[in-house]
Image (tube, rainbow, N blue to C red; front, side, top):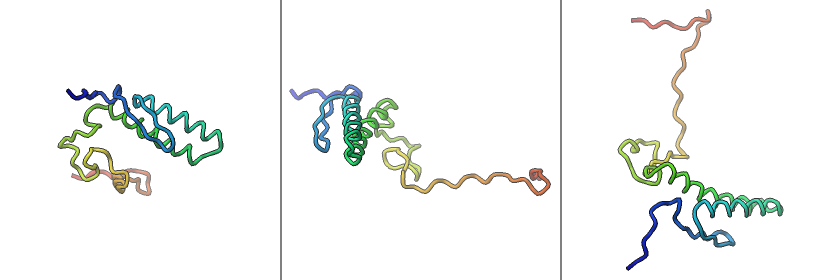
Length: 118
């Protein structure tokens, strides 16, 4: 029989192939290891490698956050997620223009707010 896959992303074992290192472990273990590698690279005066390791760590922190938020954050769709500002995974579109803020009432020159009529 085939190996049983763990369904809990927090306890699942991952294998990460980083820029110059392979790390195997839980998402938390891998994220912590990349953070340590980023600190080491920063201390050694290599900001490019430090940033690269931080980006790898961020990926695993996102996996952890999605797992803690529940199945909808991992990728299950819901009818309410179909509006234009969300992509097919239910995540906000980072490149969308921000919504126009609602107009705020303003004071006229006397310092009073306009009254509603009707």
